[in-house]
Length: 253
Length: 253
Image 1 (cartoon, rainbow over the protein chains, first blue to last red):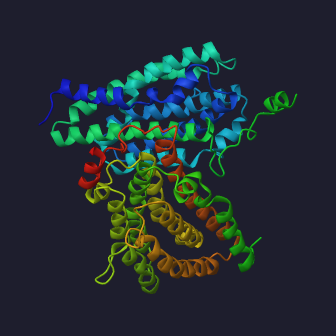
Image 2 (cartoon, one colour):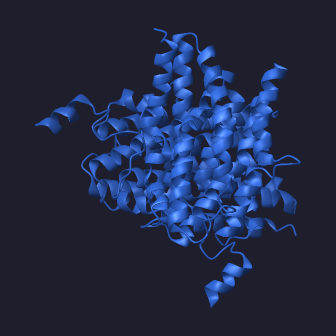
Image 3 (cartoon, each protein chain N blue to C red):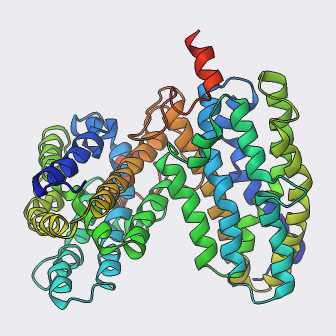
């Protein structure tokens, strides 16, 4: 049976309450100040792969949208990540974070050393948006409904617990607090409008679950590789690689 | 510089020596008799997803091959998995293994409960074969060079350590010992013939590395979810699900 708008929204929010990656133990370690510098670096290196893929995901979406108005609204997501004349953009902000934790920004931008499992999960998301219905693609983006709280927790936890944390290194998260609510308000209203049958509501809910899997499995891979008992897969980042010169010197001294 | 045929083959074999999943600790547990029944079941459920995807991967390959002779040779791989009038096929054999370890075969065949990370990795392989060059697609299949030894170790280890192991439940692996050498002899010769420049040799080696990542990350996900400290991701198989009726009764008694 088709759910009312309110019930369907509640169903979507319940998916976040049960499956969003704020409940993953890696985030508890990170925000509680219990990550080693190398664990923070591994997170920054792997999460960069997600950041660098999101504008490609959005372009894949736009490549299938025939309505210029919808494309225009969606384009702001790409601008937020890739930057404009007046906005350096989320990817550059993430690389600022990379430098702040002692990594070489070119190494991080190369995406060398990213865990294969991270790539498989993130690539699955890009392809999902390329292959599935527009409704499923937008519904998958609705994990942003749950993002503001995790960004707030992260900013507070990192500022309290790590020397590298300041306004500059955390500007990515500060900016997302401004950008995400605008995106998700549009996306949520659009999904609630479009999902006017039970079949479409089920598909949208499944898409949001899929996206929570994409996020969760990235943290599982990170935890498995870099938190005790750490088992780094062949070819993935080893803690001595990709450090900025200053960090290398500090380490040697 | 383009390597000689011998040197290039040695390079491919070295990738296996360094990265093939026979070195993963999950296989040590499994073959050494140190998996719990539920850990064996989790392996059977997740590995089924790989089995069930391989003929789709081979069909994706054939869909891009213009040479009828090459398609005909490749078709035997699909027959080996999906079966013929005189051969039940690898997928049915795998489901026999599923029943032998106490799982309901329809549950396993439904692919419910498969870890998202398993799906992301296996789907990445199918798409790789769909999107990349034919050379890269065949090179990725060459992990079969390293499979006979792991199948022998597995058959010996399972027979020695687990009550469910017998000729019927392990027939999948016995058959692969016959099938894989024929496939890989063709695939290896084809890759050695086609990779006649350094660029092609590098691409083929990278494809084989990619495939070792696909296999390794499946075991990482399994280990992370079901071996202590187990962290089963949301929605994935829980040890009480999908048991055959007999196993449920035995468990209750």
